[in-house]
Image 1 (cartoon, helix red, strand yellow):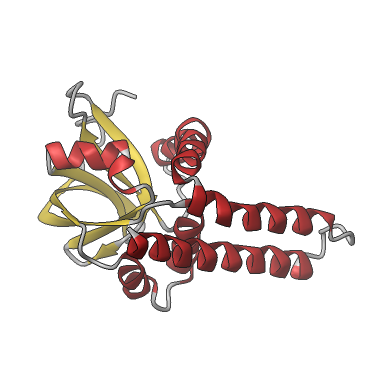
Image 2 (cartoon, one colour):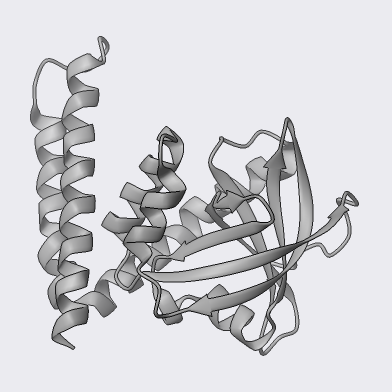
Length: 214
């Protein structure tokens, strides 16, 4: 238990500190930003408060972040995918509901590495899509290949013994968007978990097939 607590502390401290640094750097270099440091000060204070919240009350942290992602962030990202205007660094993973049998699409960081797709789940086994892929490991991933997005089917495997921070470092090396995603995951996550998806060679270009009911 103490090992997990120390790992959680290290993760959230590095992520929150890196985000706080980015906040101040952005304020410094943005010519349109206010001359008052009030906004970056408040944002930094919230990031500092995130550290004891994650360490002492991880369940509350998960609930708050999950609500933000479910009702605000994820719907926007899914909409961007539908209209074909998606920021670099994102992908969709489609799982089958373990109880409903419906298909659900969850935005994740683009962890593509050849025919393997990696996910660092922020909330570990508490994430709904993680429980779904454990019950039905055949999933689909929508990711960017060149200038287009394609669906690829794959088999998901949860790797509880793999170090998520080391996997992040390997994925993010010399890739600014992945570095930013890794920072966000560390700051927002409570129990990081590595998931490996071995992708099939066949591409599924039929956009209407397997549409998620969300």
